Image 1 (tube, rainbow, N blue to C red):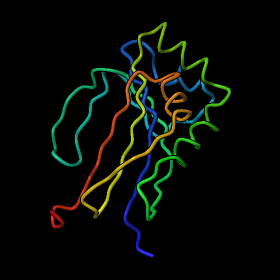
Image 2: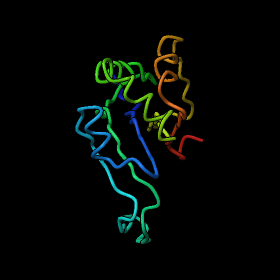
Image 3: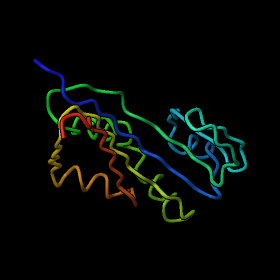
Length: 143
């Protein structure tokens, strides 16, 4: 059994006006990462520095390594986590013009990745998110 795929998903809420603590109060979920508009940052990778231009609140599923390029277990995690909190998230999107993104991150030694996401999972994501983002990281030595 060879492990070919490492994946996680993240729900990211950004806003110019809503601070991370307010989102935590609405969701009753402890985020994995946050920052506030006006915070100073320095990149660990590039060393670039600057001031944050928006607020950010994010919660992430755990990293999973599998033989298949499948993210349904991550979507199930978010369904359970947010099952009774969707209305609060929808209000954030509508009233504060927050951007609510669902990020999918997949790393692989394989050249190709193909995802099959059923309608019910797409409907769940679409019910409160206004952006879906994919990052695929592959190995160049296979090309």
